[in-house]
Amino acid sequence: MAPYVSLVFLVTSVFFKSTEGKKDDVLYCSACRAIADELNYSISQVDPKKTIHVGSFRLNPDGTLTDRKVPLARSETYITELLEDICNSMNDYALHVDPDTKGKSYKRFAPRNDKSDFPDFKDFQFDGPEGSNSLKFACESIVEEYEDDIISLFAQETDDVADKLCNVISDHCKGRTYQHQEL
Image (cartoon, rainbow, N blue to C red; front, side, top):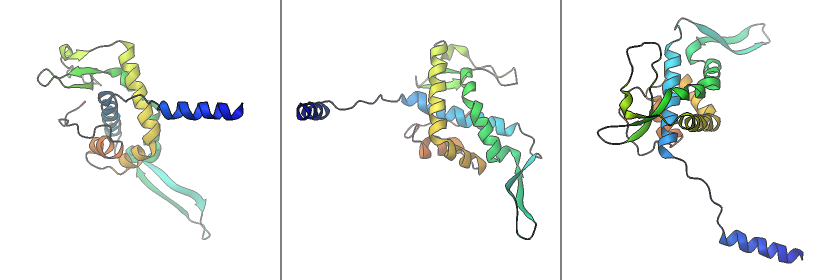
């Protein structure tokens, strides 16, 4: 009986390929760009004079400490704290359809602090909680998979971090073109 079960299992595994759900390219690319945008905004709001001690807090044999001060905004500790709550801000994003190209992407519709930068809502499609939940899930998936890369990329204070994160590191936006504007 055992050889028969093995044979049936072997035959079914050959004829039935395992299927994997296809990721929505627009959703994951937009989530990746939203992560970069939210991190850049949060980092820009920190006082550049604030610093944090990093390094080892163990004494060297000669009695000295080997620690150094780095700007708080670009410290791994601060970026890690930001990543813990970054996906909660995905509720401020909705599907945006460009009126000229009909291209779709998720963009921020809620203003941050300045009440004058409300977007034109007629180009947004509000899908209720399902839309923001799917974007939040995509955000959490990206953060979970690329957390170390995100931290090291933003800690280095490089230019075009959104392009590097979304096109080079994660490949979620590979082949897609974006205007360099706030999401």
